[in-house]
Length: 341
Image 1 (cartoon, rainbow, N blue to C red):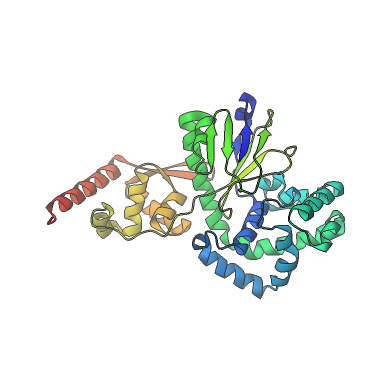
Image 2: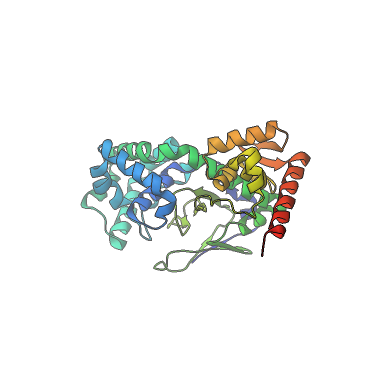
């Protein structure tokens, strides 16, 4: 377990990243390629990624250069996922290139002691070798992560909207309390599930605050830097959900689906509690762009209203929409009561 210790200053400086961290998504996606854990959630991406890597001639570089540096293990070098990565791919790659050679050598040495590093890895301390490594990273990112960008961004925006509601209701502590299931807020400590082979450790923020970064490709335990002296960052998994189930007889959407269509009926029901476009997309089993179109139709019909907060939007029912949903729910209850027992 990792125990992250907060004081009042840390709570004031804790933030949720506004966008995905490209270099961490690179690392986490490589772990998905190396493991069958959670494969159901990435099945389509896995097939497409393998095809793209093969067609772009990157399979050899993946096996010989990238995967050995990003093992699916308790440790890989911190410099590969710099804290500035949350500012975008270019900022992350610039920070990777600017890492002091001594630090690169120390972290590669730690990788070699703990997991085993390829023989050439020590040369990453040389700037020219690191430039070539960055070239391979950029090609991999374009082939494997970029095709998922729209889906990743939609999921991140949905997560931010949910955490924002926790922040409104309970402040930063309310946001931290809702991060589960692998993070537990026990004031003033955030307990983080860590791999079993990793020893328990404590991270004292000491007024630096914490940057929380939701990750699309991370599966399972959250990830933090091994070096406690680096800026505190915690990457954690988004919850992935199975494909949408078929409508059942008792579902209120069943009658609405005949009028609105299944996806819009689901969107109306989800909006009853307030929902982002990403949340509607997941509930209805459609793409983010399709969910946005369905929300537009419902809004034009006067059934929902939409509030924008930066790049994210929150959809809620209008009084008319609430009446329509209540009528459908009442109809479903009547049909259930009339059904032969």
